Length: 315
Image (tube, rainbow, N blue to C red; front, top):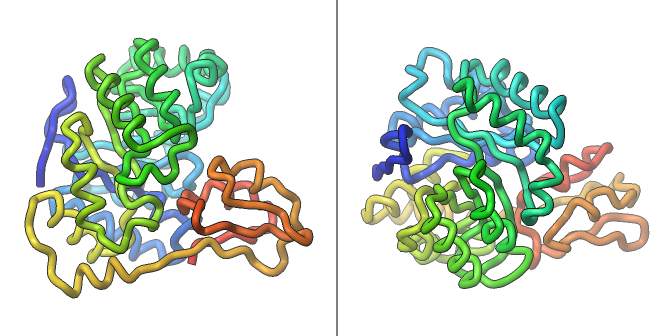
């Protein structure tokens, strides 16, 4: 396993476990099996875990954290907090349900640009108070846009930038992969810690996982690579790629052949909430039912959180 440092955060695994893959938005496995997957990752050197209030999986991570030395691993989470009250709610919920006294990294979720960040600034000020108290160690943003990465350098409050980086640029809302890489390089030069998400493009780049992984891993400005992993085979594969080792053919086949799709249940009433949520423009309402364009969908599952009838699942 490769490890990096960021200020007082030492020996962070370059491979970050994206736990959206273990949330009920994407994974219907039982609770114990999900905890076992996290334990397997930890036992194999992964000590960095990303979650979010939206994922509704704090209980899994809270169970995982039991009986572990807290300073042996790092937890990142995020929310859509926009004022003091929602910031306090997000922090207290995270602390209580994650079974921890502090959060290593707290981020504002899905920021589009600097104006968006300023619109949440009352929450940011509250997060800075938590940071001064040591309850938050580092603060940042997650985004799918080049503009937010570019604008991040304007704000001293932002330590961490968590954005889409992959070889085709799929999932980036406002430009190309090379434009994103240029923005990442600039943000890194200004002292930001760079977390890359969706190196496999939400499943679109699984036909050759090694090429996709190496593309992101070879960008020296990327500090960590967050990947959603649902089982031991996926963990083994990504660790092999990170360490430059050859994965077994069985492992590669089990991951490369794992096609997933967004499924819309027959009882969908076409309310349109999911369509408004989807920034990839992958969803539309046709004949009073939601339809998905899988060429655009990056399997982020954010649309599922908007569905009151639980119509949307990844299968």
